[in-house]
Image (cartoon, rainbow, N blue to C red; front, side, top):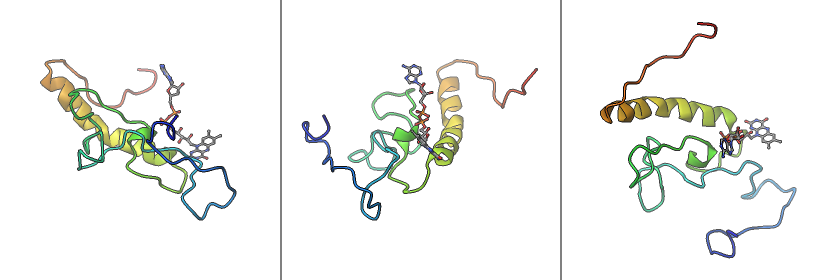
Length: 103
Ligand SMILES: Cc1cc2nc3c(=O)[nH]c(=O)nc-3n(C[C@H](O)[C@H](O)[C@H](O)COP(=O)(O)OP(=O)(O)OC[C@H]3O[C@@H](n4cnc5c(N)ncnc54)[C@H](O)[C@@H]3O)c2cc1C
């Protein structure tokens, strides 16, 4: 679908990982400073859709070439303050902090 719609060049699978191949697809809705190349702001908010935050692997700016899950989790945690701030500015009360299990 990506190739057919001219969105990406899809290469056949290869065991040679020295090139541009990744086993961890990322960055399909990436964040960044430039609206021309990044759908999300640097705080994970979708441009043109205030209040819609994307914090999964798709938000990672580019291929990491290493296992990505810790980076994805760290970026999601980093986005939390902006999500809370945006929610509060919409007049919605938000409780801050990490819930302690069992309480
Ligand atoms: C076999 C395999 C091995 C891997 N090994 C490693 C590794 O060793 N180290 C590493 O760092 N990374 C590894 N990865 C990559 C890592 O798992 C992913 O990059 C990471 O989990 C992506 O995180 P994510 O939050 O973007 O998406 P996901 O972890 O895929 O989370 C998406 C979540 O959304 C849920 N969901 C989907 N649709 C809906 C819906 N409609 N409503 C509600 N929920 C929905 C899914 O059930 C899922 O829980 C591996 C991946 C695979 C497939």
